[in-house]
Length: 325
Image (cartoon, helix red, strand yellow):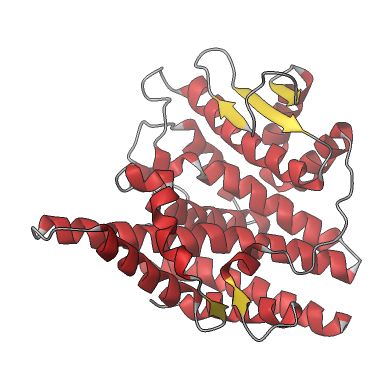
């Protein structure tokens, strides 16, 4: 598949940073430039998110402030509280955001992400009826990931310490790799299996395992040592049991990169188009909604742009690593 070489190059760089000729699959998930996690109080996290998202415009920022000031967020972990983070849109009221904030720097990104969902729900609930306010899974992760990308770029740009800057870029590359590359691998596996079934071919655990292992080798390249156990990984991916779910992560991040890039480039009139798209909820098809913000999921250029963004960040990381050395 075109652009897979970029994932291979990224993993090759990780191997060098770890001082290895080759890495194991579990090394792929390591931030090789990880620095001590800075503890960030919640009030500081709020200010960071508001400052980072200023490119979204005054109306968007003012509504975020309203959300913070009016208890849309259940912030801290407590007994019997669900783990993780979640945003639930409630029509005619307002979204409710669940966090489990522990003063970690990564929690700041979670706030930006979940508030992307919340703002999408708030806009759609305010401008659509209860039926049309429900947007599809295909666009559900777009608004959240746009916020995440804008925040990441803000943090990278303002960081002066080269090691910390490199670590932030590494985190963003890992996020894109896990969403754009790995989820596409899952989708290709799913597509292959369904095509075989439609041709009337029987599938066994052996054929499933072998097919998955071949895809892992293809997507991760020669710099990785593949333990035999990786062939069983597909069986523990819950989304594979919900037909044709996983590809939406890849389309979502491709859309988000295109949108965030235009917002950061301050393209005239673009914020207004983006907000108008959020207001539509599910009143239009996912494809048509994204075309409102100049994202065409039926055009391969959308995906090429996402990989180009990945490549630019990879080049930035390599440059900084060379400076550090």
